Length: 400
Image (tube, rainbow, N blue to C red):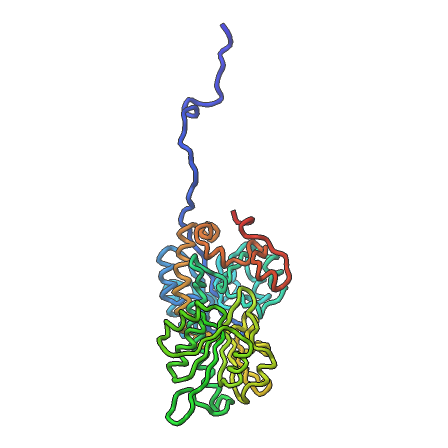
C-alpha cells in the first residue's frame, strides 16, 4: 500500500465558507478639541453647550479651552454642565484627534496639533500664505474648510447660514457707517417722507445678495441687484415679492448704478477668487461718502480697491469712498452665528462618530470630501492650489 497523504487543512477548513465582502467599522468615540479663538478679534465658537450635550450623550468627548465660548456669551460652567472637559491648557485642546475652529489656526497653533489629526475651520484664502500649507504638510494634517463643504445639491451647507447673517449684517453695517457717527454723510437708511430713499447696489444674487436685498427693502431702500446668472436674478425677484431692479453685469449699466448709489454690497463669490467687477476708476466716480461693504473679501473681494480690515479698524477711505472689508463679518453677531454653525456641525460630527471616524464617514458623505482641501498633508483642492501656485493631487486618487 502507498503512503497515506495528509492534508494541511482541517475538515472544517475544507468546507465552503461564507465570503465576507465588507466589514463595517464600529461606531467610534470622537475626541473633539475646541481651542479659544485668538485671531482677528474672533468671538464665535463652533459648538454651543446644547450641541456638546448631544455629542457627549453619544459617547464622545469634548475638550474646551477655558473661555472659548465667552465671546458668544456661553460660560465655562454651561459647557461643563453639558459634559465638556474645561481645560486651562491650550495644548490639550489642540492635542485632540478632531479640532474645531472658526478661524484657521496660526502657524504657532499648528505646531500644537498632533500628527495625523483632523482640522475643521474656515480657510479664508485672502488671509493665508503658502507657509500655512507647508505647516499642514509637515504635520500630515487632514484639513476641511467650512467654506468648501458642498452637499449633493450644490449648496454650501455651512456657508449658507453664515451668508444669510452676512447679507443682513452688511446692510445694517452700511447704514451705521452712513450716519455722522460712522463717518458718513449723515444719511438715514429708510424711506422718509420728503427724503429720497437710499440707493443700494448689490453685486451677486446668491444667499448674501438675497438677504441683503431683504434687509434693504425692509428699511425702505431702493435696490439694484447685478449678477451674470439670469436664473438667479429671476429666482431672487420671485422670492422677494417686491419691485427691485435686476441686471446682468454690463459695464456701462453697472458704472451708472455705482455713480448714483449710497451703499454697494460685494456678494459675488467665485469657485476660488471672487471676480472683480468694480474697477478703481468706477470707485473714483462714486459719490463722496458712499459706502462699500465687501462681504467677499475673504475670497479676494469684488471691488478693485478692497483691502482686508479688522473689527478693530474696520474701515478705510479711498477716493472719498468708505470701504468696509472685514473677512469675518458675522463675528459681530457672535451668538447668532455660533448657534447657526452649531446646528450644522453637530449632525456632521455625530455622523463621523457613527461611521467609525472621519475617513470612513467621508466615503459616504461627499460633502466632507468636497470640503477637504488637505489630506494627510497633501493639498487636494485644485482652486486653492492654483491660488497659491502649489502642486496638488486629486483626492479621488488618494482617498480610496
